Length: 64
Image 1 (cartoon, helix red, strand yellow):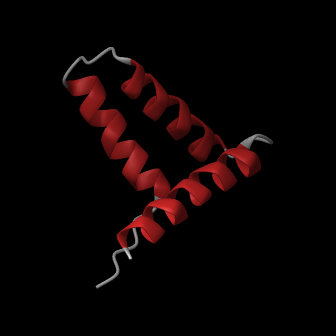
Image 2 (cartoon, one colour):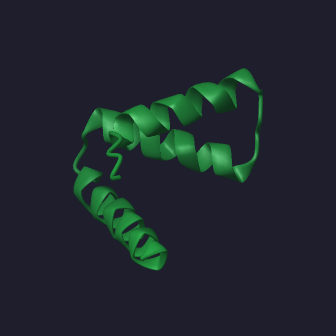
Image 3 (cartoon, one colour):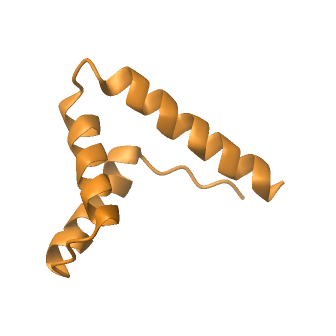
């Protein structure tokens, strides 16, 4: 079974959770940073999207 989740939805939920729990670690800062770029769609979106996609592909390959 394959489950596809939008990156905006995933990072948005993680951002909401980070804000709600008042966590101030490096992980939550990274999640909020990535969420901002995915939502804004700036010129840096392409390279960041490619990095996230490559990471997701690598994790998928580890599972097979």
